[in-house]
Length: 420
Image (cartoon, rainbow, N blue to C red; front, side, top):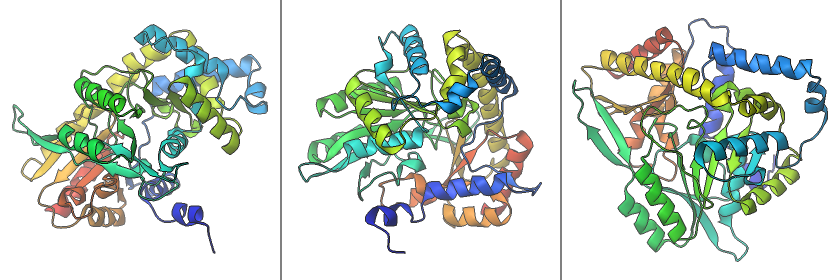
């Protein structure tokens, strides 16, 4: 088939498609021995599921389902939800938002496609702009979002080996601000900064000071700072360290309903200044007419009745924090005598393992595990814009620990067997 440049670019194999194909195969598999540790799917939290089912029943009882399924929202998304969320964020953080500061999309992936291509790629004056990731590794789903090639630049992290009371092997990625400043000073093609917080894949939560420094740099160079907050506060609130949510008119804050437990309803949220929201609305109108309204409709009453944030704080956060503690304990038990390091778990629901002396690449490890029906994600896919020759990017893997303890233990033991 003779595809266009667009067709050739977006039909080639890539990391995010590999991940989703693995998830699809696992979902449709009848194999009772399959160990799925690779996707980003949230866990099924019974109390949360009950809350959503109650809201669904309320919508049915009050004859709102026909309206949800049978009528379009505007291209910016459901007005009632946007107004409720703006009010909630204003109350919680004193941001003075209105619905005009919020746009919805069919999942965060769709929103990032719009944002990245709004700010980077081929520009009207013929120049070529790029998005800078100040801390690699970053979310694998960013890698293939650009309509043009060479749209992303990334900075290698500083790797801090952490001292722990019990001698457990931990490390943490830290932003190399000297390198970030050098790129911004010497490369006038940078048109946006982007960072996830908590970071997918590592569970890293960059500090308030790091966010503040990025914000100042973005303002200095008159470019936006995009913060992917899909796992963060106020919902689902999967942060296990001290961190404050920050927004201003130069920050584009991206949120999601997926990690609340609604990944199938595909609802991404953008909080930004009015100009950016209008731009997203026009692109939505051209691409999809109107974003999906089911997810927003299901959550609106929970927001209005001030039930969503307590649900996150009292149910979702403790649930995943306990999962994190179990995962860390299993890691320390299984890899105690091996040169394997765990990134400090500060948020989200991922383990990021670094095999310092791995004799095969993480991709080869992934393929060997896959033959045993154990699914992880090889780490090199997350080092977007980092040269392939850097050994470290081929020594790491991402594991989702939102599963049950027995499944996680079985997967970690399978990894141990292959690397010994």
